[in-house]
Image (cartoon, rainbow, N blue to C red; front, side, top):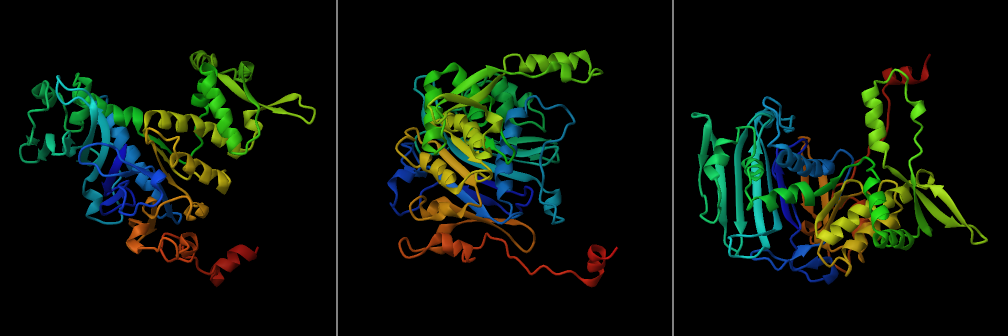
Length: 440
């Protein structure tokens, strides 16, 4: 479960910006928040929606989270001399040369000592880095509500080594070995896990296995097809989801891929041909079964269904994995190819009793119908705005203290009261450009 994420000096984000899933004081819509039953963690929200004009930087918040995840996951196997995927804010001469900072708070099941059982614990982890060096890295856990600082290292430019501090005695293992084997361009967390730190493994795996971030590009339907192939119960649930989303399908038929290998270029190296054949060997294709007016089944390949139907099918596996694990699912521009009612439908799944394990859905969208009063709490709505210096500012709707019953949030957003929307100007052409466009 995600509590908060902060980032500073990444792409369009100049100063520190924080997305928080912590519930604000009003108790409206109780199905939209939950008690994580974790020491030192308040009630959390099941979902959050980000709005903003194009180029306002809302996607960069998710890219920052994905960058942090990728660095954690790939740090140990990072090649010497290769750069970290850090992208600082370039429209300021100072920030361009300064490190980027990531900090995240989340809940994970941890075993604090050998005699205890795993239990939900708040974890705070972060690091500061440029393309070549990890300047600072820290990890604190809160098993009983009070902070235990498991490690904190700071790069000393004079000695070109690290100063270590605040190491809790509850953090066990071969720490000196792990330190010696962590290069200046690697994360201590990742190195320690690869060298068998059982305590840190669940924290690392939260990044590598639980934190799912979907970008703007279409995702592969491979996972959903595998679910349908190996679990008939999940297949029925996926069909039920499609039906409840007003997508008329009676069954899903899985067939062997009919890729024509003879269509491959003759001069393509045999090794590449064999790789393609191996990748497609067990690949299945989905066909949706519909009934005609006589009740007879007719099949359509998935790629002939509407874009919205394909997208719901693709997302369904990610949704069910998140619901079954109680993990966060982060989707950039959920509204692409989806009817507004489908966007609301997917948000409502996470804000309902079916979400027993408290999965969280965090999305960006331009679909303003989600702002209507019956779907989201006021603390679940966030805005991104591009400032005069080209940097991104992230802020919640509750900053405006909107009245629960008297204010139409959708109308107020569209009228510009909250910012986070494009400021359009009249399109004009100077004479020189008119000549380019209209004269031969």
